[in-house]
Image (cartoon, rainbow over all chains, first blue to last red):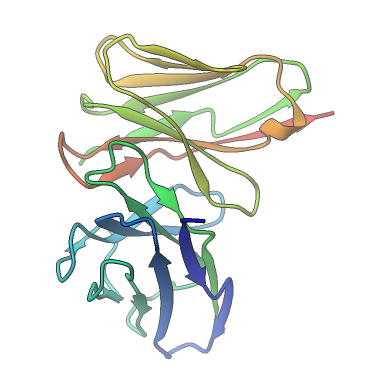
Length: 113
Length: 112
């Protein structure tokens, strides 16, 4: 079955450590996205990538970094510079510009202690 | 900047009652999408509306796009416990863009 796989589902890290969240898709979608969701809140865009080796900052990119070396993969690194990293992170992909909707992964819940 | 607001933020209904959530954009949208997120889950794409005044139905769900393409609504008839979740609308930052701005969401609870 085609879809988006995010791993791990739950992640715990100590404050000050960098952590990388994995996102892999086998949908052959060109575009991929990272969103952050805080409890009871909407989705805020962190980074997005339209094609391999290209990505743009979203609304809350500070403290995060990404890479897009392969079409299937779009990992997100949460750096120690991110002041409030504890959140639910959602990866998504779309055909073209998203006119047919985004397909989301099941998310990674990151807790920094 | 562009904003997409939804009201209400929360809604509790008795099973069998109707439910409506409203989505309002500060700018004209080329299209609008709706997603549902079950508790503990991830958003799932429901539908996209493109034309001014467009109305689409999916079983008990009715989606409408305003004439000015700045607002939209989702109406659920005779809610069921399976309708529980948060409903989000999303609109493109600009026509042809890869960036969709998500609304604040409406959390629906259905009491059996």
